[in-house]
Length: 56
Image (tube, rainbow, N blue to C red; front, side, top):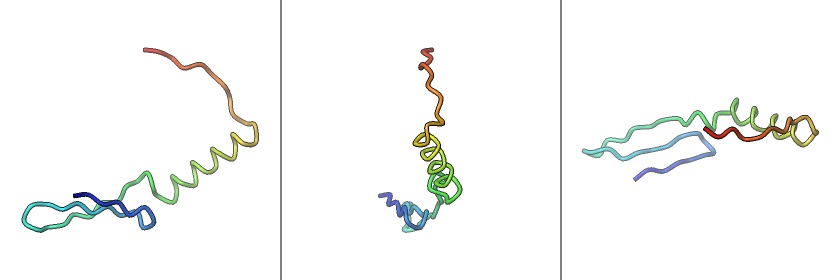
């Protein structure tokens, strides 16, 4: 069973023998969330560049 607590950046995962490992998900770090917010603000301000999707 895995639980994610986005507010505190912590995910708990049950391991065998009742041990619990704590890991931090870097996607939800303050720095990354700010980077995403800045990108959204730039797009909203019309600073985005449209391009086609490359198929590989």
